[in-house]
Length: 99
Image 1 (cartoon, one colour):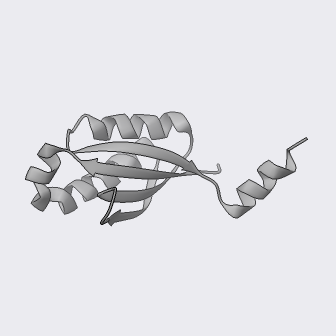
Image 2 (image 1 turned 30 degrees about the horizontal axis):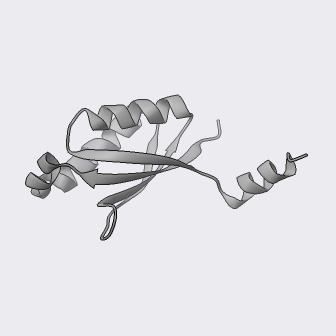
């Protein structure tokens, strides 16, 4: 089964920044949660600038990714924005379907 790729952008909440020292442990817990949902965290970076964390995730479908994002949100440490990402091959196939 082909997996779709998603980019998840995150901002720390007040709770998340207050407990920043736990962030690496929370990242590992997120990887395990993703696995339980049937998704894979391919990359996870703490970043400077507009977002605090950028994560690349492979998931089988949008419902899985939505469930994963909602599960993460209930913990209260981050607020997220998720983007569907397309590889060059996927984009070429999409463009090929244009009429």
